[in-house]
Length: 182
Ligand SMILES: Cc1cc2nc3c(=O)[nH]c(=O)nc-3n(C[C@H](O)[C@H](O)[C@H](O)COP(=O)(O)O)c2cc1C
Image (tube, rainbow, N blue to C red; front, side, top):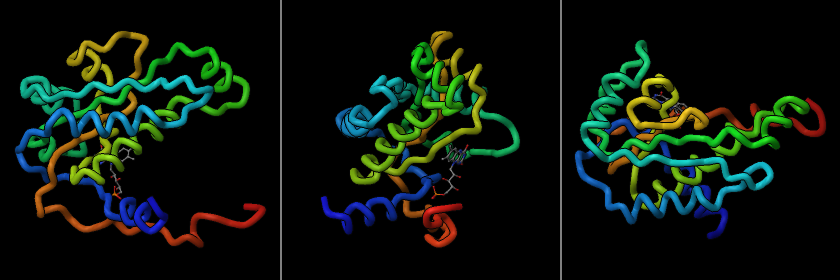
């Protein structure tokens, strides 16, 4: 893939909050997961674990009990798939780094793997939205997630309708970088 195609894919992605109530074949979801599987991670620990939630009752419980108040997400009820992106937390490398260098590897690892997923989804005609406004404790209970696993984010996934709002404004290049020094 050349740069033009890559930047086209990246710029066509936007947070999708309007979905068709249509199932997604497992093979497509596995293609997205394959993109995540290949992501880089600190010390190659690959701490990501994904839970693909298709079950309607579980999705209902997530919508009713797993979302924090104050940022209503009624559209989530129509999403055919919710993904819980989780992190294994027991790596000594990650604990040491956080302590010594103050760099928290885990959210970086998970963010990269998650965005690989999102871009692969976009390339397959699927819409997605990161969801960080959730109750981690409730999600762990609903999905039987063990204590040593952290839920880092949720992702919605589905076929977009044509009712999605346009692109969000982004900062200009000159706003986000400087040369040599801050
Ligand atoms: C870590 C993270 C958490 C987010 N949490 C939510 C959320 O809880 N609910 C929501 O509707 N959108 C959420 N978003 C989507 C952002 O609002 C969205 O990415 C941002 O407004 C930029 O729009 P774009 O994705 O269309 O470029 C989240 C995005 C990220 C990266």
